[in-house]
Length: 113
Length: 116
Image (tube, rainbow over all chains, first blue to last red; front, side, top):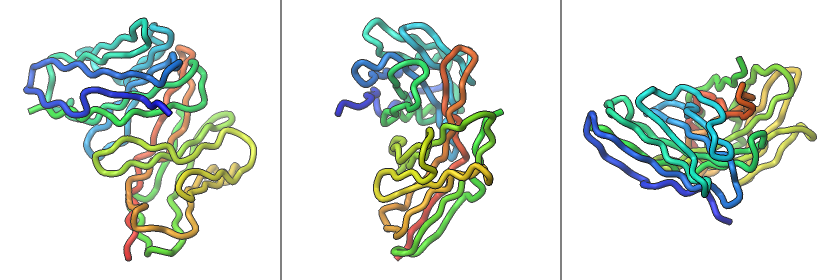
């Protein structure tokens, strides 16, 4: 079965640079979630989208923005990168806003030098 | 606030012995609870969930979890541990958000180490 696809899998950036992470949900899934997992930490909810509209916002820095496109894929844009942004970024998808279960992608590991 | 707690940072068990990874929850209303496993430098793999129904939930790779409402617990168990079960385990609860959607709130994780 098709799963959530994230690209790139690994990304290395310098401080103050920008990064764009992409997420392709499971086919027919209309809801996308972004989570950030710092080193040794549990995943933290950043933001979610349903039907191309922002649904909810968590602990997402103002330097980050995201959107969901007409084909339901989502992009997380990160600007003015800081060392503390180094983390594993997960995307998850679900069918419907009130879905019981979220399906996670493999994550993108971002390293900021 | 709705949350889960994993009281143990690490659990060590010998291969072949039963294992338990503990999780307690603090939720108003009916909890939707999940267990995920994470291998080094890998993503989150879904193990099992409790939504409603039988208190004993069976999941992937021989794992099961027991929902206990009186003790507000959702401990993960396996009758016979394997070395390959060594990984980081997260308990999570679904939290309904003001925008109508939901998020998962995770526990701090428990590192399981299974030794020969």
